[in-house]
Image (cartoon, rainbow, N blue to C red; front, side, top):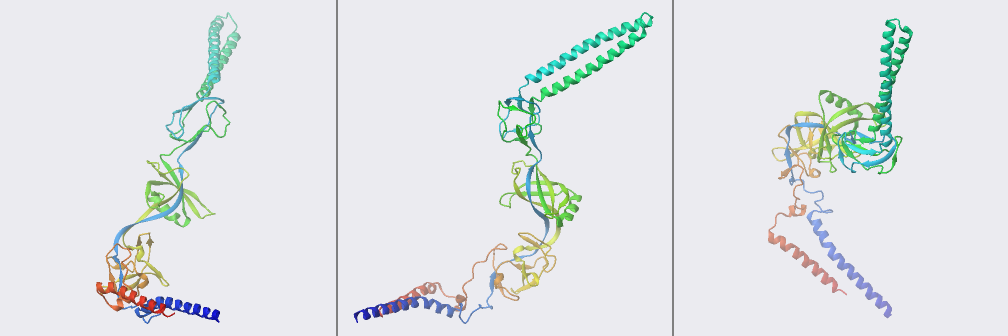
Length: 430
């Protein structure tokens, strides 16, 4: 019997706790129903109250037309410097990452062997020149003897042929000298272009060969530099038309996709369309004075192809889309809104060109679209177009009417007292 009494007491306590919890939750829900919240008799809000919103006036402006693309930065020229002769690498006259000019000496290969070959060619020519001079003197003597019939004419002809042979030999010697000189000069490796050196690919003391695939170093031209980007094939006709009229400006954007880091000029439109992607490749050249562009970098670009003169523009946030197309909410003189269908010819992140539906000077709503309908009354606040207006008062407060500051401060205290009284009464029940 005592056990059943114990269970009965526990059950009563549980019921009391449940009642206390309900008393704390139920009053706010009742207040919400009386205030017109979900489940109340004012469900759906009061459409007679004006909607606070922001608006801006349509205006005329010159609207640039850009085509956006994604590209890859490429060096205008890239050269892998290789040795043209075989030999031991004696010296490297550069630092990794150094900027060099065309003609600067970069490396030296042991020239001993090639210097000897050059000296040998020079000596051979001197020898043949001496033989040629002696043959010419003999030819003069034979010609004088033949003129006096002291020697047969055949001997003079033979000597003349010998002189021609030595003359040809001297020319061959000169060619050998030029070749040896060229090989000797190749032992001193100079920069073929101006640019920046990358990581060196060989160290001093190594034996280098003309057949090495990697070479000694790579020079990349960074100023100017180029960007290779693509555009859809549907825009090719527009690009060609604008390109034929004059140079087209191309802008390269930074990592934030907002900051223009460099401006260049379109130089080439590829002569074919990539059938696998349906795009056409274009190449633009940039001065790159601050080295913001780097070879191999992926970057977003936009190209100016046209400018629309004196067109009506509105903020893009004002343009809405419905089952029947695009429309805006225009503010009438009596502070009500009218839903107007508009046509859109160009739209950017901030501005939209509307050829019809809105005229310059008409005010269009830029916020609070979920509360608007055709003919709804609005109150226009102050702020930038597209800014969020200050939050409106809850529907319950609007229906109750304005209250003084003292009443606002007193109301939470009264609600708290009512909840406390209910809690105390419920707690005393066991």
